[in-house]
Image 1 (cartoon, helix red, strand yellow):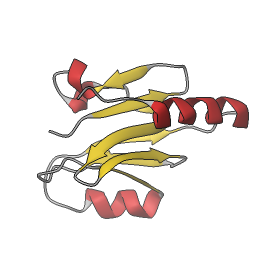
Image 2 (image 1 turned 180 degrees about the horizontal axis):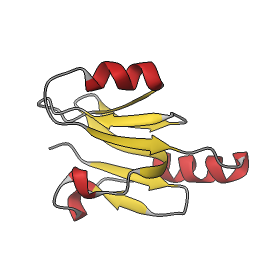
Image 3 (image 1 turned 30 degrees about the horizontal axis):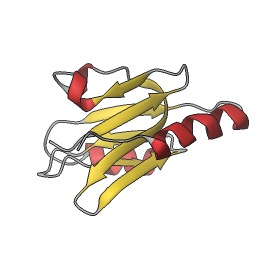
Image 4 (image 1 turned 180 degrees about the vertical axis):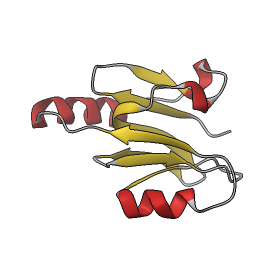
Amino acid sequence: MTEWAVFYDDGLIVESRRIDRPENIPKCGVIAIAHMTPEGKRVQRGRDFYWLTDDEDYTWYGGDIFGLWDELTKIGSHVVLFGRSIPDERFRHIVEQAVEYKFDA
């Protein structure tokens, strides 16, 4: 499974390497998700919803309600997280943490 880290509005960071299953992480208050892809590190941010695909790469995507509905029509399990609006300065600080986050090599 691809490595990732979810950054929440309250400062919590949940890392894939420290949990047993992505279904067990908090669902609300997501500000950004840093994740590795075959092309390198990506940071999803500023979305209403985030979902983890169950394909071979286990990629995180973010989008609006229509993107979420599209994902939920697909066969398979779904891990969906909910974004949150927060003041701009706090948002930028958390996104900066996600951008600077280092995955262990």
